[in-house]
Length: 156
Image 1 (cartoon, rainbow, N blue to C red):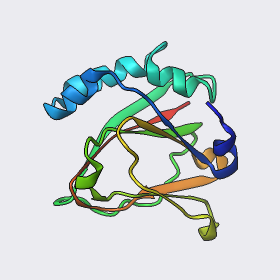
Image 2: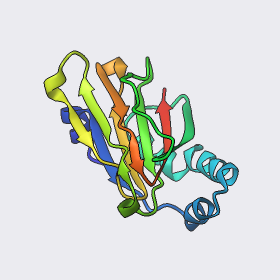
Image 3: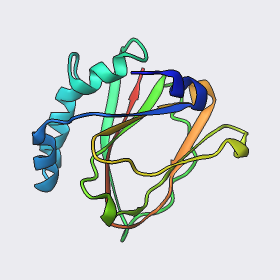
């Protein structure tokens, strides 16, 4: 993984080939099973663990599955994820054409001109973000149509 983008713009995206089980669990809307599968991928030696390990020694990884839908969604608030080393999102959106909104906004704190819009990435894309520890903050815009399923997490 080339970490140059992360150093220069504060975020980086890489495409991962996720196990077929992930897509099947999403299609079944089996979120408990999906969470167990993601736990394996984030465990020592797992695909996501290995991708994140390139950036920093890992002491702890936290994650959750975030589902935002057009009918019930609202604008996110600016936040910086505190003292965590990095934040990440893993796109679990199977059909981007059905999704409107849900854009991730990212900037350096106190520098509105540094604002970057990061559209929801294709399925299997890992987006790694600098956090408040490095002077960055982010928020997600409202989903206006479709379902945005993301594994979001933090590395300490």
